[in-house]
Length: 86
Image (cartoon, rainbow, N blue to C red):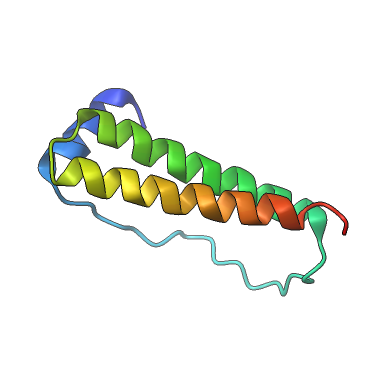
């Protein structure tokens, strides 16, 4: 999504969430480090989207986008930590 689309989304104050056409049905072993790296990358992408949307948004939406970005970042850090052997 480009920056203009982010700004339009942020200014609208609403977010439409669409389900993915691809639903993951495979059971992931709790120790698959490569999968955790993939998840960390996806979560970081979501966090970046939220930060970009926050740049265009006005309060109170801006704060909500930033909180959401922080939550995605935390998930990414947790997944990244699980990608390393203990």
